[in-house]
Amino acid sequence: MIMCERPISVDDEAVHPDEAGWIPVCDLGRLKAETILRVAGLDMLVIWNEGDVVACERACPHEQADLSLGHVAAGRLFCPRHAASFDLCDGAITSGWPSPPLRLYPVRVTGEQVLIDAGGRSGR
Image (cartoon, rainbow, N blue to C red; front, side, top):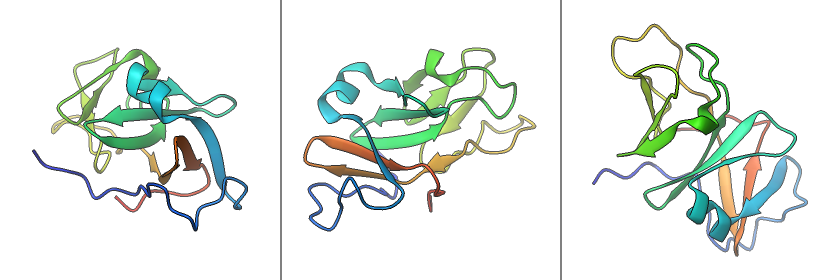
């Protein structure tokens, strides 16, 4: 199994929910149970992917479909509107599709709280 370079910190004492840019979005247990969650108030998703937490834009960059209606399998997020999927390590779309990559955002986990940096772009 290929693991992503993980922009995730577990129980990182240097991370504070009130730290500039970091927004608490959900409980880790809930994310594990539901796999894909919409982030309230933002056009973003958080995803449980084979032990990694991933944050990404909600709209498919190809056809603007709501990716929260898609599914996750084998490290990829599948669009509910067409046959393309996005690599959850780097956002790349299935080969042959004319689309920019899926935008990914930095994620941290402190205790059981998932936080995202909505203003950042993941270094993946």
